[in-house]
Length: 61
Length: 239
Image 1 (tube, rainbow over the protein chains, first blue to last red):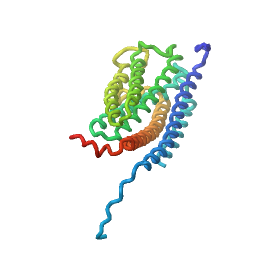
Image 2 (cartoon, one colour; image 1 turned 180 degrees about the vertical axis):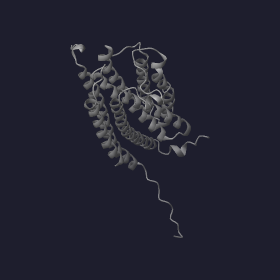
Image 3 (tube, each protein chain N blue to C red; image 1 turned 60 degrees about the horizontal axis):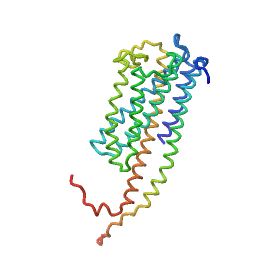
Image 4 (tube, each protein chain N blue to C red; image 1 turned 45 degrees about the vertical axis):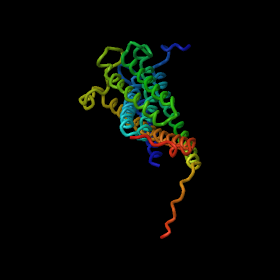
């Protein structure tokens, strides 16, 4: 067990910045990955749905 | 494309602000190097407040208009807010140990109400997992999102209302903002960090919102797929 009193103030500064910036970066990466994964799923689910029938043909046209 | 540009700008800004906070400004005369944590601590706290404020406003928007975009905004605010609240608490603990001699003190009103804020919004995210039905989930979450927001002013003014270890609020009155008692370099480092973190917050919010919208659409199309012909068989409810 490291005695906290032996750790310099700079170690606390590095721990604060390192964990926050690292954590935010990891969250941003996971968000980008989830977004990339969500797009094909959504489009494939949408394509599974029955397409609406075509409008009736206007005989005058 | 615009979001990617925002991400790059935010990344550069956070890098620059961090470099300035760690190497560009001198250490504090009284607190030494530990005072450098203040820049990231205050920036995180400000964005936590902003996130939960956005969640509360979007929750009202959902309850009034039943707009799925409102629920997506509320969810984005809550999730990003939890991230920045956890960051605020972590930075505070790292600052508290060398300056106060302790990581945490439950008797301190600011610390305890901030921990409660984190618990409330973790609860908000958990409540969203209780049901798969998007509209019901959004309504339940909106109520929690509005009630939980009551804690935001309590957290902010806790250092004014009650006595504790924590220092007074950094932003309290327009006079303090326009004529800060701290040296100009310290204020510049804080404002730079606030700006950089706000850009990163915006990028996170936009992308979390997009993900929530895609999830909502996927859920809705899956529900329609599971229940073919339901709309025709069941009469529409009376308004």
